Length: 451
Image (cartoon, rainbow, N blue to C red; front, side, top):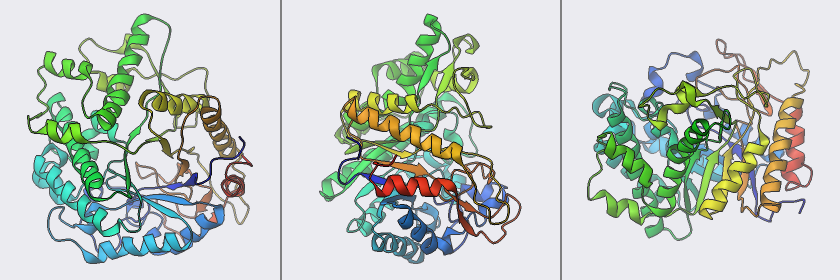
């Protein structure tokens, strides 16, 4: 097989904050607390989305995963719905469908409505779980006639790491294990409520959980390194995937909670919600792999935090200037491992290479490094499908039109289209194709034949 199956999705993936910025009628989110100038307009897709959708259609994109900004459609998070914000996304959906591009919607990508963060500390509160479920049900009901594919949380396992406090809207709390585990459990409840709602109300819709899949190598063959890497896999991958597919946490995680007296706010009524959930597919992001040196892990450290303190540079891989390794075999490993364990279709919805680039005049950026990255990862995906029997739904690149990184840095560019702005200057934001645009167009339009 040299082409992908009929109906395979090729596309682009972004978040609302990295494309829309603070423009239009919206409530504030936790991103309004950040100081980077890039967040004001980012790449101005709020006004330029028809132009960007034309570029995607020319590239051969047939799916675009974007985020609904909760604060744009419910300015205070749990009050009145903003019809202007909902209409904005409705118009986007229509514009995509008119170009033959299927929308996939992510309902949350790190931007908690500021009112909920300030009053309740975000997902540390069950009130915010209820507010999220209310928001999600309304948006799904509004768009169910036009949007088939849905995600609840972007990179859900990150809410089980030290990033949870920031991305979960817990802006003024102790970074304790109790709070970490409560944020994660509450987001898991929110996901389950929404997934159950979809499966009860909409036979035609597909909903899945998503994680930032952590491929973690032991630094050596020492048993302690192998054990530590295995625990990362258990806590940050398998625990979440087991919940998505079987409706329960893993015994090892629950044993850790019990032996360390962690209060994760697990209430008896939660079982009925969690155990009922199912997933139609498993989505994940993949950019790089990690390597773990157990000698650096102090006794008593929670496995959730191993990678924060014991991650090392892998001497067998190359990396970009941000130390993100390039490992297409790790991508195949991720695809095949998920499918073999859980036997649900898998969907890599973020993949790409960040690189520092600056356009000089009208000279096209020759980003051969990005072409090689995507070629190698698409080939690895094909090997997972052909040689390993993995069922893959599609392949979405990340930020194929340049956007600021999650830290607001415009220097770390992922796109096949250059956007003329810097961190400090908005400039004219003119879009210019890079060499990788032609490569991806050939791949997407040939359904993988010309990879």
